[in-house]
Each structure stands twice: as structure tokens, then as C-alpha cells.
Image: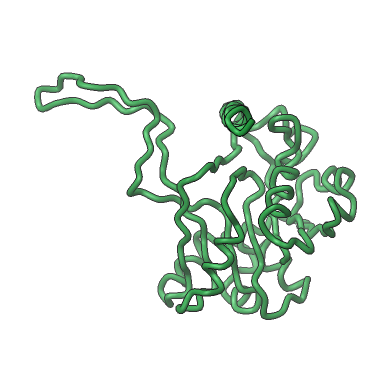
Length: 237
């Protein structure tokens, strides 16, 4: 299987860590986000090739990985000007001349233990033959919640609760490399320009997952993920 990893953002909320490198090279728990992602991909699917869709400080990625990582071929799809998520995916898929095959696509700032192989199997076996299957994760508030009664008396504080019936896009996709490109913009975002079209034509399927998932978008996110990884390592030991 081949994977496409979005790695072109400047990571402004992670400065100064991204002053001299792209976000995927920011270290979490002692190794770059991109290595967490590649290790996860290798563990879950038979990964043949991974392509970084990059722009900002992209040569640092090439210096770090070269043309292979743990036996997996590494490629780089470089944008001279930002193309948006949809444009970046389109450019990489068209340039690679991929056939009628499924590819894994993901944002370059996600750390998760999602069983990707099971998600791929759900995509390929679906009777509806979706063009894209997207990961959904429960919405978790970044703020604490205050519960009050009818007289405005505070009854309970709840720290950063999870809303089990509200789902958000988890930034991981399995897509058919032949059917997807015609729905992708040359410049624009997959979330705004492609997914609404696929919804209207019934070509998009969801894969809900309640396990470990985190977006790395701030120093605080790094700290929280490192804490989670530490707790998981302790419990597994």
C-alpha cells in the first residue's frame, strides 16, 4: 500500500519549534511526528511507499529521511506555492500515476493507534464502493464544562469532556486513487471542496474510532500526547 502524508504547513502555533523545520519533524516523546506516523503505517499495513506532500522547509524532511525508512521508499511531492489539502493530494496522485488502487492519506500532525488495516478492510469490503472512507473521532472539548440547574446554581465541573454523539474528521483517509482525483481541486481544500460533493453523490463512508487519537497543533498538545504515551507504555509494561 502507498501513503500520502500532508507535510506542507508552517506549524505557526508550534513556533519556535518550527522556525527551522516543518511540523512533521517536531519531536514528540523523543522522535519526530513523521516517524510516529511511518512506524504506525508500517505496523498496520504492508507499506510500499510513503510520499510527503511538502513545501515549507521541505529539504529538512529529505535530509532526515532520504529515499527510504525501514525499507519503505520515501518520495517528496513539493509545492512551489501552497495548493491546499485537496490540491496537494491531487498533485501527488496524478504525478505518481496511481492506478485503480486504494491509498492511505493523512494529515501530517496526527498521532493515533487506529487499526488502519481494519479501516482499509472496511473500505474495500463496503457494498457502497465508496471513493473515500474517512476516520471519525469523538469531539472532545478543549475547555472545561460547568453544569448548572434551573436556578443557575453550579452543580458540577467537568474537565474537557468527550461528546460521544458528536464526531469530527480525524484527518486519516482511505481513498481510491483512480476515482478521487476528478473530485479534487487543483488548488483548494479537500474538506471544503471535495467531501461535500462526495456526500451528495453517496461516495463517502465514515470509520468511527474511539481509541487513542491526537492532533499535534500546539506545545500543550505535545505535552498531553507525551503524557498519554508515557501512561500507555507504563500500562503495557
